[in-house]
Amino acid sequence: MSKPTSQQSAELIDRYLQAVRFWLPRDGGQGDLIAELGEDLRSQIEDKEAELGHPLDKTETAAILKRCGSPMMVAGRLGPQRHLIGPALFPIYLFVLKMVLLWILVPVFLFIVGPANVANSGGNWGLAAASTIGQLWSGLFIAAGIITLVFAIIERTNTQLGTEIKWDPLKLPPVRKDESKPSRLKAACDFGFNIFGLVWLLLVPTYPFLILGPAAAFLKAGPLLHQFYLPFVLLSVVALVRSGITLARPQWAWFPLLSQLVQSVLMLILLHYMIQAITRAPSAFPFVVVQDAVRDSAKYIKVVAIVNVSLLVSVACTWLGVCIAAIIQIWALLRYLRKRPSTPRGIVSLILR
Amino acid sequence: MCYIVYIAYYMTNGTNGSEVFENLRLELRRGCLIVAVLAQLRTEQYGYTLRKALADDGLEIDEGTLYPLLRRLETQGLLASEWREQDKRNKRFYRLSAEGEAILQQLLEEWQRINTSLNKILQETSL
Image (tube, rainbow over all chains, first blue to last red; front, side, top):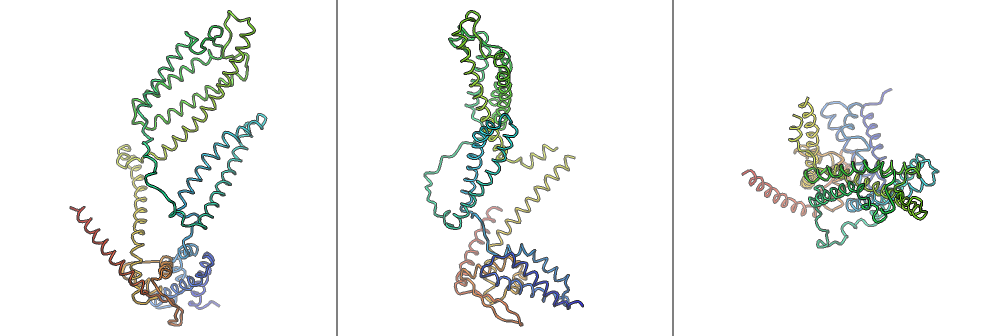
């Protein structure tokens, strides 16, 4: 036997209120809110019944409840506005989060934990990389969790922090220059140094003392330098062209960022092949060898060995430095892409035409 | 083809524009609703009749907005309420308190000042 319609409506309202109650915080005002909402809904049903001239059935009641919104949504609107970290603390929270995660945790994993894992992996680079990424991932989560918890506690215990911060307008940092526009002076210096570098590199085969100094009297370039000389010259030409374009087209704000990154990547590839050539056959690819005139001198052979090892260490350090530079350049490029002004609608329409 | 892409771009941005308008409209309404509720409660009413009265005057307000607002205004001492039985049902009746009356007066004066300034600005910019 079916229930009378008014009873069905009442039951539906009770079920709805129960669902809303579930999502409301259990403080002293919960009962009042539910009672008020229930009264409002019953009044709405009464009005509708008066308008239609008959008691509402289940579907018609459901339509009123549907218009009111889902229980979770209604509870969210009825309940007190709550937040884990309020607007006063949020900028500081975001700043600390960025500092710890991006500027402390990531570099620590990249330059300390990662190399340590590689050293302990016994040559298994893939396993070391996977292990580092796994550790970094969980480290990021734990650090973010701890920071959020600390700020949530501060929020709960000292909600007036934002308004109590003492500050002096006179101590604010000076206005920063627009970083997106490259400095003309810097670009000119870069261009000048690149010309100098290329000329120097082109003169080295004729005047070895330019690279070997006084040691040129008993040392000369080895097979490795001969083999990599042309790629280094080409890379210098690329650098010169890059700095020339930067100087000639200062309005291309994106160009220095992208071209420096490309140059760093090319440099890394070159250094990688160089290191690979040395590590595969150290004796076949020395940087420098003794001059023919002193070929049999044990003293000079020892000096050559020391110079070659020193140069290898220098190349390895350069590789690491370029790696760091590339990471910074990627960061700068991403920051530029994120901050660059959006294309005006008019320009877009012109481009599309 | 180019026009289709342009229309798609325009429509996407158009949607963002309406979202912005909706947010600004809600912001603009928020303060006005408080004044409207206080003014309406110069005569005692319960939640549903208050909502109906506001809707009849062109200010629709849903349950999820009205009841927390009433509670907040009561906590601030601007409203007084009591549960009473009417038509065999318990209803919570609200009315403006003495403090609420004074605050409403100040708010209405402020509203008049804003209105005058805004009209002046609009007249100046339309010249």
